Length: 147
Image (cartoon, rainbow, N blue to C red; front, top):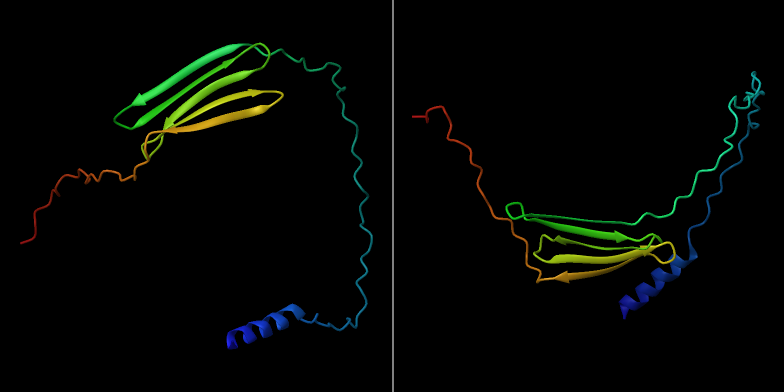
């Protein structure tokens, strides 16, 4: 009960806010600065003419590519495949092996109307990542042991 009364008292005091401090007005006049002694710079118009051509708009070019990396010693397993048609519609997928042992697979499509739309899936079961401890392979010191 005491806690509720204390909380209500604190809430009431906090809702009133702090009073705004009243600062005295300065006894001196505001400083008056003279006008600058230099005139504003006048920038000349450019000496070159405006371009009279427009950048051409090229139609989308169809293409297809894919690549993959599978390197077991370094645990790198990546792949990417993409195809585009002559209307600007792009489809593709990529996958990567995550540190927790799962494989992330992203299938996507993109065009000028819907933008980039991706479907992300995961294969495998997530495991706790524990890197294998390997002691450094430093040679023994070249100096003799103390006696």
